[in-house]
Image (tube, rainbow, N blue to C red; front, top):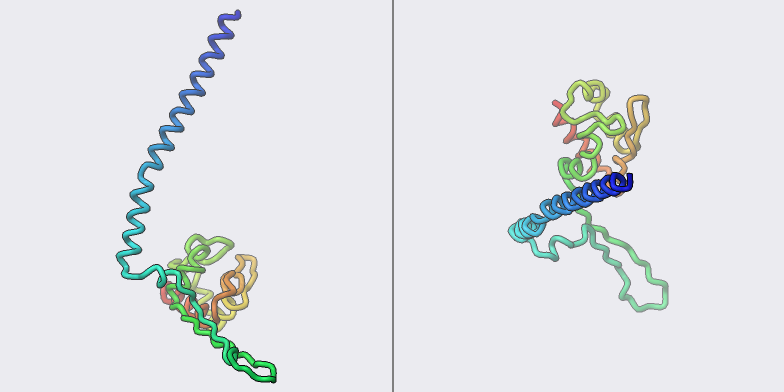
Length: 168
């Protein structure tokens, strides 16, 4: 009886050990190519001709007008913002693709003309309004500006125009 108990426990331990070694080997094999992939991505970034400063440059510049004035009255500052508007495809890729490529939350998939037919028939202004302020219906939910409040109205409209063009 004791010999059978010992044999069963030994087999279980050998099985666990074999499974752990197999998982370790799979982990090593899976991660051995990561340095090569990192090097490839690094070369692709360097090959674009962009410097590190270009890649990490802010998207807006703020200039405080009148900050250097020395006077007795309080300084009145104004802010000048220079923001580069992205085109519709860039906005779609950055903000819209997550839902409109998979149909999450009832979002109509880009390219499915049947889902877009009634929406396009309602008119471009209705699509702009739904994209800008959001909408809820039994078929799905569209958050305001696609859930990205940093988008300008022009960028949202450009994304809507891009999506409409993809569904014609």
